[in-house]
Length: 503
Ligand code: BES
Ligand code: MN
Ligand code: ZN
Image (cartoon, rainbow, N blue to C red; front, side):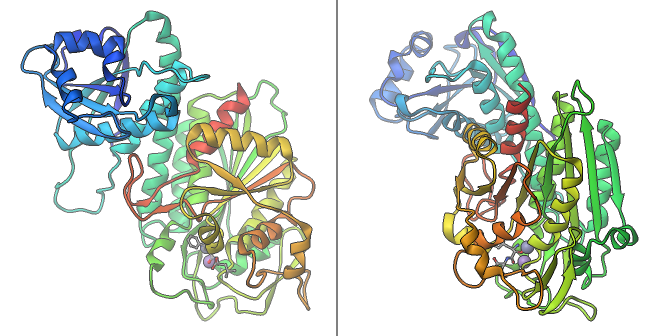
């Protein structure tokens, strides 16, 4: 998908000579707003009429497109609701722009102008607002058409121009656009990778994507092949990959924008299973195709390091992707098999479908070599996460209060919220094995928790957060700026965390 061009211009909305002018309006006080009032006068009172007749009420994500018939220079006006004024958040604005961009696309218009919302809830800066607007607009127009032979639904909105009333806001809005484009672009990249089927997006293809990014952004990269993994002793990753014809990869990318080049890095580790059949503990057929997105975490840490490089963030960042395909096969790992992880700890594999924690065990142990200032792993780890949290919260676990708090705040700001779950040692009872240091499943209760606790055994006392995105990673229905299918949720949280950390 070609990414929308976003620009900013100082100017009043009622004088903009554009094809479509987007105006965001709150419920109830549509006409109280100075801007709307000015525009309403210019339009000969039509805005007031639409509101009075309840054709447009300003409810969140409500849209109304109509022709201005020459009353103002804009040919058409697109009203978008923000809901109740005192309830407006960055997420409201993000969604409103998602709804607006979709309507513009339906109308097959090439570009539009949009006035910076005049609502200013406490603590919300023009920078934040512009960033949210750009994210909403770009992500709301997302389409994945690579495999369609007819050029059918292909209309693309090419440009958005943000109108601001005062020159004084220019610097902030420009920076907001820069950040918004970076996070949206990263999200689009992740959605694309997740949409590609596993016969195309193999572990080797993931490695190629990573190489291309490293080259383009001048990030250093190292890819470990099977023989190297054997030499190092990554028995867990190798075990998971055994059933597949596709050789596993272990990808390490490093971006160093820190002033002090030896600064302790932030390390991100992403679960990258290009397809999860369950292995010998085979999954049922229903919905198994979703498991092509079991590499979401890996795609997100890859996109995050690219965004950090593009934004030139002043920090040292390492992204690690353990990559494999989980398949049954003549050589596949079997229930009861014991693997020795990179850390030296042994694991009895009671269920080959609990493969994510196995490849992450080796990924996290490898990450520890960098003595991270902060270690974050992100993974479509457990079905139990979906059961516990539904679609709107990411499961968060961690060992460090300050890090958890930062992640929580960045998630809130990005509109990708986390919910903390307990990482209590009591649960380890469920992971005890009769024959090895631990087993890879914890029985019936607390499946999301026992998975996280399993991972915690590989991070020592490093400040660590684990994010289970199995809940949010796939959407059953289309929302304002989230498509049906892969959502790439987690990407904006990670990038926002990196931005907030480097400020
Ligand atoms: N990739 C799945 C988890 C998953 C399920 C992600 C649904 C997204 C949607 C993971 O590898 C898995 O299979 N987990 C098992 C663990 C179980 C065997 C302990 C699960 O949750 O069923
Ligand atoms: Mn699995
Ligand atoms: Zn999996």
